Length: 246
Image (cartoon, rainbow, N blue to C red; front, side):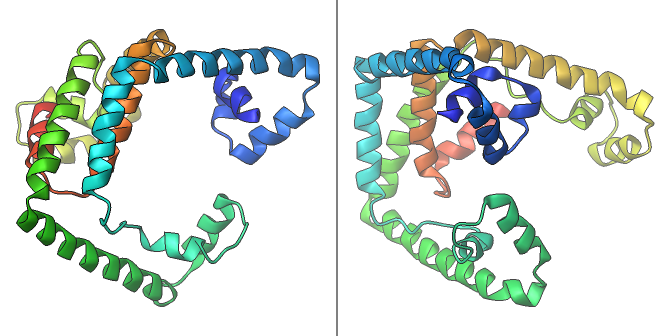
C-alpha cells in the first residue's frame, strides 16, 4: 500500500519521485511507521465506499453507462510512443521514455504510421455517429455532465495560467508585441507575474485540500471521469465550455 504513503505523506520530494522510488521508501519503513498511513488509507476507502452508495454517484454512473453504450465502437486514439512502449515488456516507464527519445525520426516512423491509421479509423467513426444520430445524444449527455460540473465547482478557483498570460493581461498592446516583450524581461521583471500565478495556484490547492474528503469533491472527480470519455469527439459542448473558460 505504498500508494497510501505517496498520497498522504505529501512530502514534496516523494511527490516528485517515481512510483518505484516511493515504493522503495515505503518498503524501508517499519510496521509502526506504516500504521498511520494504513489507517488513513482505510478511512479514505470507507469514505469512498459511502459515496458510491449515494444517489448522486448512482446518477452519474447511469450517465456514464449511457455514454459507454454510445461509444462502444469508438476507436481508441493513442500517441505513437504507446505502440513503442508496448514492445518494451516490463520495463519501467522512465526507461521506455528514454528509449523513445533516443530513436531517430526514421525509427519512429512505423509507430507514427500506426497512429495515423488509428486517426483514419477515428475520423470514419465520427462520420458514422454524425449520420446515425449518436452525436446528438452524446452532446446531450455531455451537456448534462458539464452543467453538473459547473454547479459542483461554482466556488472552485480557476486553474492558474502561465505567468506570461498575466503579463499580457496587464498590457494594452497587441498579444504578439507583449509576448516579444516577455521574452526579453529579466527574472526580476518577471517575478511579479510569477507571484500572481503562485498565489492563484495556492488558492486552488487550498480549496482542493479543504474539499478533498467531502462527498462533493468525490462527485466532481466522478463527473470529470465521465467527461474524459468524450475525449477527441468534436461536440458543440466543448466549444461552449472553452468559451466560458476563456
